[in-house]
Image (tube, rainbow, N blue to C red; front, side, top):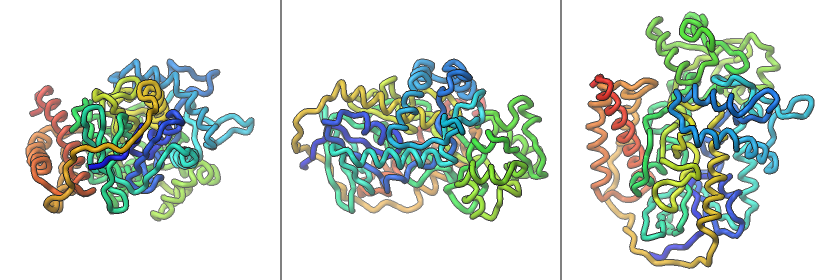
Length: 493
């Protein structure tokens, strides 16, 4: 099989992948793979903003670190966390050089807002669609780079290693293409589609984690899954619209089925501004107390024009669902949102496999601990993708490239049975939602293991459906293995 060689292959086109490309040496020949269209990624869905110590008169690194540690249950990697917080502001400011427009105050300075878990106003934002603003701006800049080849609607179907070279099988325009490189950056996003309900986009199937796992890379704390407390309560759709943390940051109240505030019963000091995992657990406690799963978020007491101008995208989306957030409470409920665990990396974003890097949600830098502080995700994507680029520039300098020949398996095989992904989603939703059900997980892991063995040991045709089923099953198996081990340690099983 003939493989076309690149200096670097980046898998994923969210903030991590794009910013890595912009920071790699301009002499390098880079291939960027986008599973669907460039803007379909979790990064583009990020509403609130990006957290950074920009106002150093009223804020400082130690306060940002402290807030992140509290939210993360002090399970954070302190060294990587310090890198994140101390280097983050320069990357956020660098976005201005790529045309990113943050909201401004009257004096022209960047407007900084407050979100749950933060003790200071430190969230730079573009209305309520910050991620989309950053992604689209970075895309325009990457498209101008003559050394970067972007392949949209290109799914990675194979990632293997032969000596110092990575071998990739990419499905593009229904054709298999083969590429090789010594440096791969996995920026494949999260695992949301392993659940029945998620705020994640359709591409979030954990593919990068599965490929890294099968290459022998360390996978760390995959059971560190975050459930956002305020997804729009729409039980008709698997992809739930997120109502940003920033709405609570601007003063919205959480209400129970009686339209009464309840957070003061559980969190008298922080109330609605407690970290996400705390608020989600409080909602479930209140559900048990009231016997109802109806909950609401209410900011209607604020000036209607302020709401429309501050949250234009959320206002429009909620209005499409039949609710006017300037006049009434809107229904919300916790939903799978983010992954804090992932492919284990060091401070340079390097995995335990030489030449393999991971950035963004698929990576585990350890900065978030057991629960991510609001708006630290885009910051992590920026800082560590830049550090990856710097490490690759240093250790994998551009050299003359050529076509290379390797043995590689053919994609032909049996058709994949239907229903595997649906079964995995049902299993995860009942075994681990907000808090794990240890007994259910102990039963369910046996079925997940059966499905995993079936997918790994049967010669199925290598198709996008097969890869996603394999990824979701692998992710579910690793998560439930950790949950069951924890349950045994606690004496719950």
